[in-house]
Amino acid sequence: MQFQVEALSAANLIESLAIEASDEADARRQVEARRASVLTIRPLAAQRTLGRRSAFSLTLFSQELLALLEAGLSLVECMEALLDKESNPAAGSVLAGILNRLREGERFSGALTHQPQVFPPLYVGIVQAAEGTSELPQALSRYLDYQLRLEEVRNRLVSAAIYPTILITVGGGVALFLLGFVVPRFAAVYQGTGRPMPMLSQLLLDWGQFVGNNALLVATVVLGGLAAAGWWLRQLVRSGAWMGLVARLPGIGERMRILELSRLYLTLGMLLEGGIPISGAIAMVSGVVSPASRAGLAAAATAIREGEMLSDTFARNQLTTPISLRMLRVGERSGQMGAMLTRSADFYESETARWIERFTKTFEPLLMTAIGLVIGGIVILLYMPIFDLAGTL
Image (cartoon, rainbow, N blue to C red; front, side):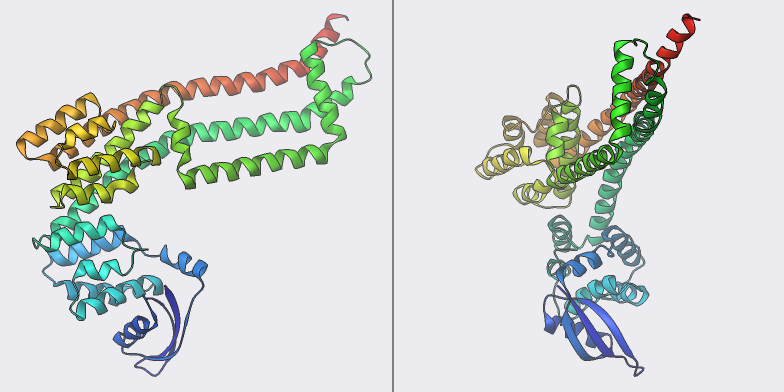
């Protein structure tokens, strides 16, 4: 949790500090490590604490720590250097907590476990395995490479979604403008002509008259619908249920499964290459798969502990494809399961990248055509009565 501390610094200045600590005593130790005296100390509210935690970047911390370790500094010296240069109070409190525990003789992985909101079990497991072999720099490098690859896949998906999102937003905005502003004015012009109109044009003009007479009601309903849709999408993303919905779409569901397996293999391969036992590694990677696959992964972990081969139990729990199953069996025979899992992830990442490129090249023109047809249809229906009137002159 986080504490708000008023302290007297070595220069006899009163400072206000935000300290991340397990308890009040730990917060006092961190303040004293900065050569300051505690005046007052009180816990911060949970919501405020949550907002402060996001200020600590685990990737940046790993990059800087790796650079200092490769420069020949000890772990304590690295933490002291990182703490000295840190200007953000929240991040500084995290570093101070780690440094204090290292000075008390605690292992690095143990110091990290006291702050689970910053250091996830996956990260702690990598560090813990590296401590037994004195390969912490290699473990950090492996973790950074893992994060880089995940970020590349994420950026690829985001880039593919940006242009369609812009098209849908702009096209939807234009359609709403026509239906909510232009159509009601055309309806007022045509209202007194008394001439019969095509059915679709009449329906559109009836809508225009309704909007003109109930503008406030229509605006409220539209805004409420957009707000409800935004809330619903946000809940889907938070709960992870959006993956289940996307998986039901024809042609996309299988690709989502391949992408999920790729991330699973990449994470599991990194842990195995770092020296973590297979049973512990599977327990750590449960968070990278969807809830639907998590049950299968748990069943696979139980079977592996009972002596079954990883490839067989993964295949039985639908955690493989025909190609990855063959690669896993090769890894079992060669004793290089970690490397083979990473290669399987490489294969499916390349395949996913090619599919995303083909999909965007096909979907974007189709989307533009659909939006053009909708907007063009509205315009044509508005002008059909004018064409009809012009034909009678």
